[in-house]
Amino acid sequence: MPLSQNEPRHQFRAGEREVRVRIYPWLVVAMLWTVCLLNYADRQSIYSVFPLIKVEFHLTDVQLGVIAGSFMWMYAAFGPAAGWLADRVSGKRLVLSALAFWSAMTALTAFTDGYHILTAVRALGGLGEAFYFPAAMTLIARYHGAETRSRAMAIHQSAVYVGTVAGGALSAIVAEQAGWRQGFLLFGLLGVALAAVLSFTLREPRAALLTVSETGQPADLWTSIREVLTNRKVLLLTGVFAGANFVAVVFMVWLPTFLRDKFHMGLASAGLNSVLSLQLASIAGVLLGGFAADRVVLSSRWTRRQVQGCGLVIGVPCLFLLGRAPTMRTLLAAMIGFGLCKGIYDSNIWASLYDVVPVSRRGVAAGLMNSIGWLGAGAAPIAAAAGAKLFGFSACLSATSMIYLVLAVPMLWPARNVSYRSGASSIAPTA
Image 1: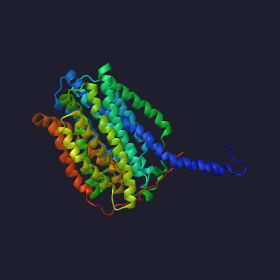
Image 2: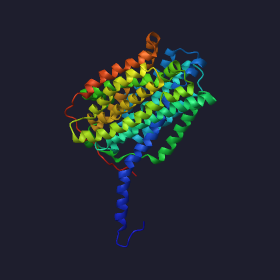
Image 3: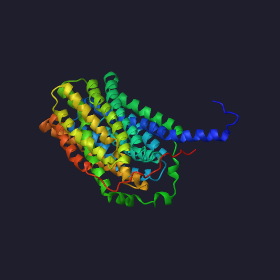
Image 4: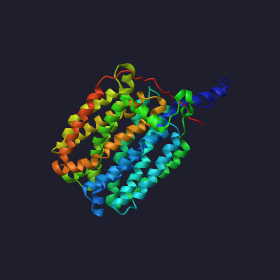
């Protein structure tokens, strides 16, 4: 629309800039959403083709559990360092470097020829992915204040479920047509290409240039870790995250195998059914939890943590039924219920954490939570495989409902002295 004779050009340009400032924080969420999608597609893709890898390399279920665990243990080992770096270096640089590295490792998976090499490559993929979430969450928090933080992080979190579906389904479909290796090559090359595109479009926020007086004194890694670990609210959220991750990993790794064994599904069918309904329900849950949390915490005494607790407690009967379901229809209902409740919990994992830590420690807090959470989750595939030998996968899946019940109690307990006004709300990108 052309300028009128009475409309100063500088006012028009100022209005354009104001619109860009309002929109760009959501574009950042959209760009990171695509990265997060590949993050989870890459890690999920191997589980759908476990039966083929097991046959080709002559592996046991416990050895498959070690392959899955190697990723998570490396991921956990580098979490604190990744978070510490996220507080100190360019979030854009850290995100893109991590994306390029783990994508290269994903592509390299296609060329592995044995158990030990495959385990090592998966571990290196975990190393790369360890640096993504602390940097991405810090970047989103710099662009989104308390009024929009839950929504922004919930939208980003929805990519976890879309990526899980894409990784689980596409890798199985490609495996049936061209062998299990080709899916890893596809996802790896897509990741490298995405890193190249985002190097031109993703920008660092001005909040990253705040002075020391605004963000607090810089500290070394161990001092930062010690400060975060003395915060009881952080310890609670981290402990619950570890337990919830344990449950999630049991299903992520072994649900395709459970469906093949109990309901005699083919490889592609088991890969798709193990993720589709559960993850689609999780998308609905994460958006519901994120939008609800932004409203209730600013208008009532409820906290984001209690919103998470509601998701956990409602999920208990769904988890129990999931393992015991006698028919596919019952199983589908249980999976949808579990996915919805899981999404409500997941929607505020990081927003709840950022409510109780100072701005200057957000990265290291996120890194520690990721590290401890995935360190425990790394034992889940092995524990479930060992338990299945004694009791069967049905009993193991149902038993996870007790974990959710234990986790829900402290999360529903009322919290005090939680601030929801920290952080900036619409920060312009740098030029």
